[in-house]
Length: 410
Image (cartoon, rainbow, N blue to C red; front, side, top):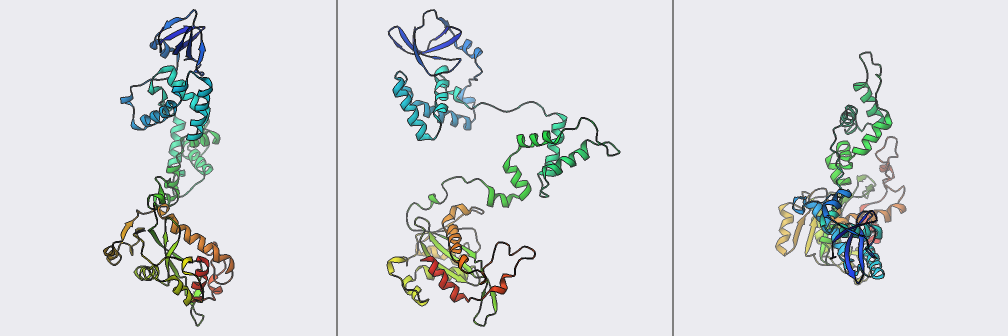
């Protein structure tokens, strides 16, 4: 009797994990319960081939598996490896399972399942995820349902499932006189097939377009802002059109101002801003001048008194992170690199990579909008038919609005 031998007893197959005197630490390879100390009295030897015939677990050559499956296998074995030294001590084994489960954010039962699988078969491939691919051919009704979904549902017309189902019946299950033939699938069957085959990526791209998917529905991967904001000195630049209409000194309507800001990604501090009537290179010029300006003197121009420590920023950041806007890729802006500043242009439709400045705009407008109702503030319904014309409410000049912004930034 040796370690890892297989024995049959009482209708089960046991694998020996440890030997202590007349007792052995064994695991039931069929039930796959936690190992126990037992005595094998009338046991008969069993082979690995016989064990495989009695179980539904498929074992494979690791070299034949795809990289994703290998990664899952090694991740699961890493969890199991922390428990293996404590197999013989039930108390320490339980403690180790609980500690690893809490650290990795999984249930203790899941970890026990992985442990029992590995111990029963002593093969890493036993930890591979189950293959759920359905290799059977689609029936005629399923082909019709797939055709209807692709033709009527996954389109920019954004038809409902009920509409797609009705159009499928009209095209595939009616005779020349337009009468339904017998044996057509029910709507419940159609909805079940849709839910079983649905992929949200296909849903969003087909109905809303690829650009909308990349901007609003694409899954977030990587470290996001953290990959740029490992220390102070990384400024994120962006512009937005403020949700307010302004007038000139003669109370003539001008329009909505453009706010350009630079926010430190690590601390969230506003390094500088520019409020102008037009964006592009001109707003960037004002932004750069404001970044290096003395903020105490700048606030004093608008009648606001602050201490220098309240806004301690009068230097250019070492790195500037921008999007793919034309003004940020222009030769004029690139000249800033001659001052030793590194410019990083993010790929298109990646707003989460400069989330600090995006959130800055959101918080800033959320501060002043509740206090400026009926003073030119734009509500979410401003583009809807019959909505109030917010241009008629405009009553503030750019200088007054900038003073309000500075109070919100403090």
